[in-house]
View 1 (cartoon, rainbow, N blue to C red):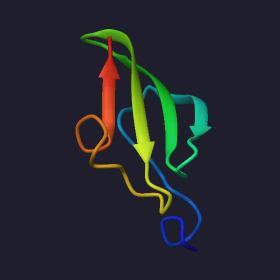
View 2 (view 1 turned 180 degrees about the horizontal axis):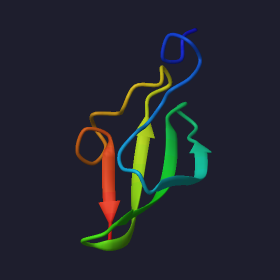
View 3 (view 1 turned 120 degrees about the vertical axis):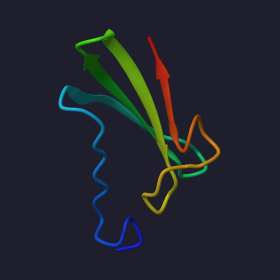
View 4 (view 1 turned 180 degrees about the vertical axis):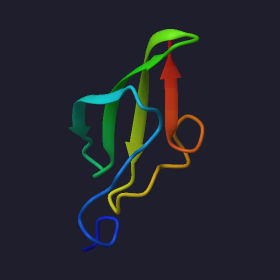
Length: 69
């Protein structure tokens, strides 16, 4: 229950998003690699970092999310 209140964190960005990798850092923060696709921009990756409680890490990227073309 300490992780997002129910043990599950749901990340939702676009229709064409697939989480492809996950890593837990030594400090308990979680990095998720998300493969995305935009009809305007084509394929790209999002990197999301969560705090140990399941919330987005405001110190990473923009509000916890960084993108790479």
